[in-house]
Image (cartoon, rainbow, N blue to C red):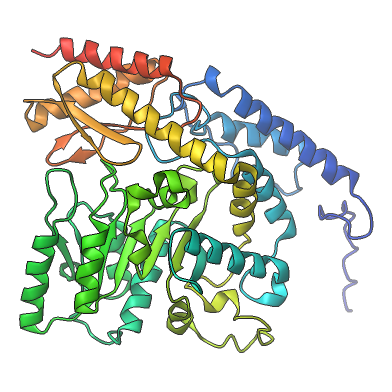
Length: 471
């Protein structure tokens, strides 16, 4: 005998928002989550920037879905163990507090759930991305018609830039092609070459001067040697803001060299390109406008929620040429091409929304105020630390400052940096501890708008105490 089909299980409606009317359960859930987040942000100064304990709730889903109260309780556990960038003493990394409009736009982005893969999946947002990237590119001085694409972080932006340069220069099949960058360039370049199937030796590190900037004479010498051996060059990469000290390579001389030799110039401006957005700070990245491509990360200083990186190009059509596939499973584009055709990523959320809304909230005056404040805090801390006369300071044009005691060997510098970082953390002041030029340093990133003079005074005082304890 055939068995009877199982009786349908009684279940609650699936937790999707109603398409027919306002969903009061969703609204209540989001309002509670919003209050929870606002409470976490508003109590930031009462907790350390670095939590003392990382807490993990249950990972696997239960047989039956959790109710909103249980979900919010799990969320709170994760929040309690999260890094705390809204704390005034969070000075370790390029991760500022989130901008209010960007937080709101992130929520709307998730709710819209549009996909920038294709125009019909994100009609207005596709146009918004094209328009905003064009405005950003021209604001940085790139020529009319320039533009680009949003990306999930500077590593991806740099990768897409080098892939585009390689294809644009007809070197896609050359396994001997190389990239030249400073010895202090970001590690993402090495990752990019690995993804591109090139050996580690394809990244040629050019020496830097005493201020951490790529040496143009050394670059010319290296290019001469490569020309003699017939080795093709994919791109020269200049850095506008190195990771430890914030140094800016001499962009104008490098652009002149690249023009003379018909080479692609990419500027990794993940840290510093935002300074080119306003007239009062544009001198810090003079020559940026001469680049063929630029990486810019508004998330690192302007408070745009992660992720917010963009690759901007003087000739954005090169980007489409490098990544075009035709997307045969989508309707034809009615504009300037699908988003999945203008970069490596296919499916992409509308991250441009939080950048657009955040910039609109700040305005140009607000952007300049953020930059002014960051520079002023770096200058103040440098003056306080210089007063000791016992520190080697390494800084640049931006808001980064690294330092280590003079005269210590590598082992002693490592011990000092560990001890001093812990002392600072006990006072809720968090610095990072990079290894640079063979010795450990402490590094302050002064982009946190909540940091006050009193915090910098305390930081300098504690550093001085650690210096006084040295033999």
